[in-house]
Length: 137
Image (cartoon, rainbow, N blue to C red; front, side, top):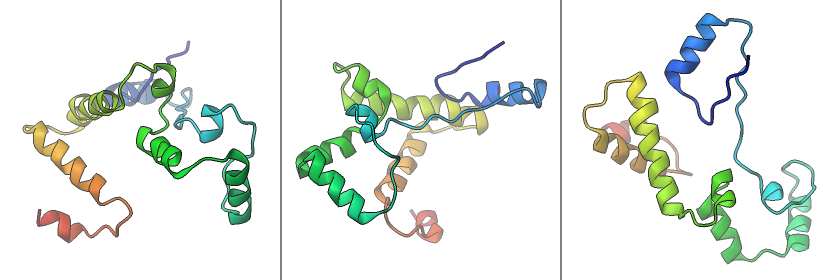
């Protein structure tokens, strides 16, 4: 028997792992890669700067296109459904995450504050995480 889900449900995973210990596998699927989106057959990403520069010259991507890839992200549904707006996808993704996943783990009385907290964390991307600063917010 196979159980396939599109995202992780805390209660489902908890129940399945307890009932089927040793007989269940959880496969974490990463977002699409640049190569997958553009149908390129290439080696997985590595930190060889010379290879990255060479690849950028071959692909010939400009800064605006690169920004659009970063802004849009690499979730498959954004590339399968071109009518899907990025803003709607992200809002629904966060809402589902808070409403379903986080709410199953902890009791959230004020979901708006959880979303605000996620926004604060997102704004700190690339910065050193200082937990005391977060506690003071």
